[in-house]
Image (tube, one colour):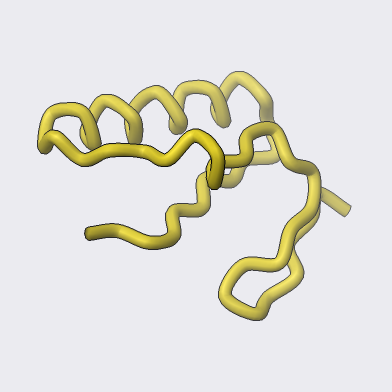
Length: 55
């Protein structure tokens, strides 16, 4: 069971690559992603109490 995964890159092409790699590994190990709780292409967020942004 995984609860939080953060994928971050300032470069959109690298971000897309990282997302694909992570989703592929989750698929291989038959781990599910809850679409309702998932967010992609977010420019700022709070993750484990830390503010993360592109700025």
